[in-house]
Image 1 (tube, helix red, strand yellow):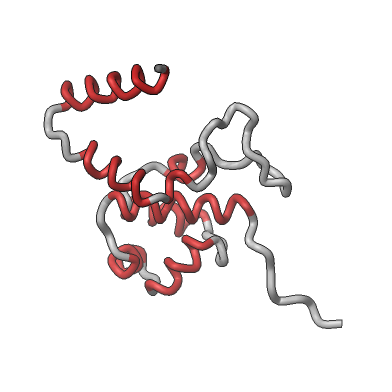
Image 2 (spheres, rainbow, N blue to C red):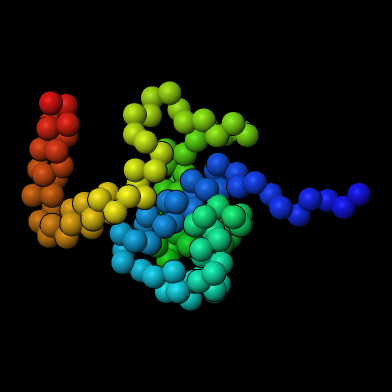
Length: 132
Protein backbone atom coordinates (compact mmCIF):
# COMPACT_ATOMS: atom_id res chain seq x y z
CA UNK A 1 0.00 0.00 0.00
CA UNK A 2 1.50 3.35 -1.05
CA UNK A 3 1.76 6.11 1.50
CA UNK A 4 -0.55 9.08 1.06
CA UNK A 5 1.67 11.87 -0.24
CA UNK A 6 -0.79 14.64 0.54
CA UNK A 7 -0.66 16.04 4.00
CA UNK A 8 -3.01 18.33 5.81
CA UNK A 9 -1.51 21.67 6.77
CA UNK A 10 -0.56 21.69 10.44
CA UNK A 11 -2.06 24.63 12.37
CA UNK A 12 1.40 25.71 13.56
CA UNK A 13 2.81 25.62 10.01
CA UNK A 14 -0.10 27.73 8.79
CA UNK A 15 0.25 30.17 11.69
CA UNK A 16 4.01 30.63 11.15
CA UNK A 17 3.37 31.12 7.44
CA UNK A 18 0.79 33.79 8.23
CA UNK A 19 3.26 35.59 10.47
CA UNK A 20 5.84 35.52 7.66
CA UNK A 21 3.26 37.00 5.27
CA UNK A 22 2.31 39.68 7.79
CA UNK A 23 5.88 40.78 8.45
CA UNK A 24 6.77 40.68 4.75
CA UNK A 25 3.77 42.88 3.94
CA UNK A 26 4.52 45.29 6.78
CA UNK A 27 8.01 45.74 5.33
CA UNK A 28 6.58 46.11 1.82
CA UNK A 29 8.55 43.15 0.49
CA UNK A 30 7.40 40.93 -2.34
CA UNK A 31 7.58 37.16 -2.14
CA UNK A 32 10.29 37.32 -4.80
CA UNK A 33 12.40 39.72 -2.72
CA UNK A 34 12.12 37.51 0.36
CA UNK A 35 12.82 34.38 -1.66
CA UNK A 36 15.94 35.95 -3.17
CA UNK A 37 17.14 36.96 0.30
CA UNK A 38 16.91 33.40 1.63
CA UNK A 39 17.77 31.50 -1.55
CA UNK A 40 14.40 30.03 -2.54
CA UNK A 41 11.82 30.78 -5.22
CA UNK A 42 8.77 32.98 -4.69
CA UNK A 43 6.70 29.80 -5.16
CA UNK A 44 8.45 28.29 -2.14
CA UNK A 45 7.67 31.43 -0.12
CA UNK A 46 4.01 31.04 -1.18
CA UNK A 47 4.04 27.46 0.09
CA UNK A 48 5.63 28.51 3.39
CA UNK A 49 3.09 31.31 3.84
CA UNK A 50 0.14 29.02 3.17
CA UNK A 51 1.48 26.34 5.51
CA UNK A 52 1.64 23.83 2.65
CA UNK A 53 5.39 23.31 3.13
CA UNK A 54 7.10 23.10 6.49
CA UNK A 55 10.03 25.38 7.23
CA UNK A 56 13.23 23.95 8.66
CA UNK A 57 14.87 25.68 11.61
CA UNK A 58 17.79 27.03 9.57
CA UNK A 59 15.51 28.43 6.88
CA UNK A 60 13.21 30.00 9.49
CA UNK A 61 16.26 31.67 11.02
CA UNK A 62 17.25 33.04 7.57
CA UNK A 63 13.72 34.33 7.03
CA UNK A 64 13.85 36.04 10.42
CA UNK A 65 17.12 37.74 9.48
CA UNK A 66 15.67 38.85 6.13
CA UNK A 67 12.53 40.18 7.85
CA UNK A 68 14.49 41.74 10.75
CA UNK A 69 12.78 39.76 13.53
CA UNK A 70 13.79 37.09 16.03
CA UNK A 71 12.56 33.56 15.29
CA UNK A 72 10.28 33.81 18.34
CA UNK A 73 8.24 36.46 16.46
CA UNK A 74 6.83 33.76 14.20
CA UNK A 75 5.35 31.88 17.17
CA UNK A 76 3.90 34.80 19.18
CA UNK A 77 0.22 34.07 19.81
CA UNK A 78 0.46 30.68 18.09
CA UNK A 79 -2.06 27.90 18.72
CA UNK A 80 -1.23 25.62 21.61
CA UNK A 81 1.30 22.89 20.88
CA UNK A 82 -0.03 19.56 19.74
CA UNK A 83 -2.34 18.43 17.02
CA UNK A 84 -5.46 20.25 18.17
CA UNK A 85 -4.44 23.69 17.03
CA UNK A 86 -6.64 25.37 19.62
CA UNK A 87 -6.00 28.97 20.54
CA UNK A 88 -5.18 29.77 24.17
CA UNK A 89 -8.33 30.61 26.11
CA UNK A 90 -6.99 34.09 26.87
CA UNK A 91 -6.88 35.02 23.16
CA UNK A 92 -9.58 37.58 22.31
CA UNK A 93 -8.48 38.31 18.76
CA UNK A 94 -9.66 36.36 15.70
CA UNK A 95 -6.87 34.15 14.33
CA UNK A 96 -6.75 35.85 10.93
CA UNK A 97 -6.77 39.47 12.16
CA UNK A 98 -3.02 39.80 11.56
CA UNK A 99 -3.46 38.97 7.90
CA UNK A 100 -6.10 41.59 7.12
CA UNK A 101 -5.40 44.55 4.88
CA UNK A 102 -6.60 46.92 7.62
CA UNK A 103 -4.17 45.53 10.21
CA UNK A 104 -1.27 45.68 7.77
CA UNK A 105 -2.11 49.28 6.80
CA UNK A 106 -2.44 50.29 10.45
CA UNK A 107 0.90 48.70 11.31
CA UNK A 108 2.68 50.27 8.33
CA UNK A 109 1.26 53.68 9.18
CA UNK A 110 2.14 53.36 12.86
CA UNK A 111 5.72 52.42 12.01
CA UNK A 112 6.05 55.53 9.83
CA UNK A 113 5.58 57.83 12.86
CA UNK A 114 9.14 59.17 13.12
CA UNK A 115 9.12 60.35 16.75
CA UNK A 116 9.51 57.46 19.22
CA UNK A 117 7.81 59.37 22.04
CA UNK A 118 4.86 60.33 19.86
CA UNK A 119 4.51 56.74 18.62
CA UNK A 120 4.43 55.46 22.23
CA UNK A 121 1.89 58.12 23.22
CA UNK A 122 -0.28 57.14 20.26
CA UNK A 123 -0.11 53.50 21.34
CA UNK A 124 -1.17 54.52 24.87
CA UNK A 125 -4.11 56.42 23.39
CA UNK A 126 -5.22 53.44 21.30
CA UNK A 127 -4.99 51.18 24.37
CA UNK A 128 -7.08 53.63 26.40
CA UNK A 129 -9.74 53.83 23.68
CA UNK A 130 -9.84 50.04 23.39
CA UNK A 131 -10.58 49.70 27.12
CA UNK A 132 -13.39 52.17 26.53
